[in-house]
Image: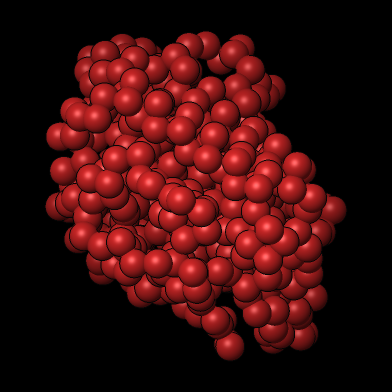
Length: 435
């Protein structure tokens, strides 16, 4: 295993005291176990597709990250918990050695879940010892890596929910990931909301064009792909004051949206045909044997529930978001609609008349995932974190109902391939000011 002495992110934040940062880190680590508490060992071993990972793997991988990136290069007298596990739980870091194939993570019955829990406890204890004993120079190098690892683990907490939800969607019993809607989950959303059969029509909020500053700057944490801060020129535009709802998307479905190739990008239409899409992922049509009902049902974290017309639609691919926008552009109340760019979204973030900007659904934008002018990846192996994925991906903004508390920023750039729809991803409409 090569040394990671140079694997230090740019210091774009002011380090906290050791005790404050360690306390926050251990709280995040504990939250990962809390999320998985009601899932069985069998649940946590499931891998339902190559893009998803078992919960057990997420719990081990986030521990390996701290072991490989923080402890190995910086802890005096370091020794691996089990050196063989680096091969199992490295995700995509070429600089850190070979990896077990991603599509085969579900075959790893060993180590057991109990062994992974022991691994996590060992890593936590070693991180505490390092924080307490490190010299000032070592701590200066370690603190940014701990911050990076903390946010990395929060990303995996959301994936734990979305990956298991996909696995459960493949089970004819459609079990709930979370026992009851009234359960208070340690996440910012997953909240009960009032429902109405006829949601209020979206309102168009005019926003100014001109030169806008986007990207992250300041003393708080940000990933390298959010930097550097720079200026963009925007034409005057409008954003819908809320997200597209399930009821509105149901109208698109009822109007034959999945049978009209003129609404779809070419690759999107090919995907619809190849995969037989007829509605968003996890929607169950009336009469579906898995959830007999007179109306549409939606499978989610709390199991199968009746479609709520005023809830934001989720589990959409970029292709579906684009097709809906194309369809909405032909409707009188949304004539000229389109998806916003990521810069339009960010420039509008602080507008008080916009709602549901965070905490409901990641919002697809029309922006391809590309580096900002002057982009500099983190130094060392952690430089593989974001930059090498800047091809064939689309940017999403905001955050979802599964995003952990403290993991949301207006500059945050999430990204997924355009066909991905197992995430809590939805859309907000935009249009030009002249429409």
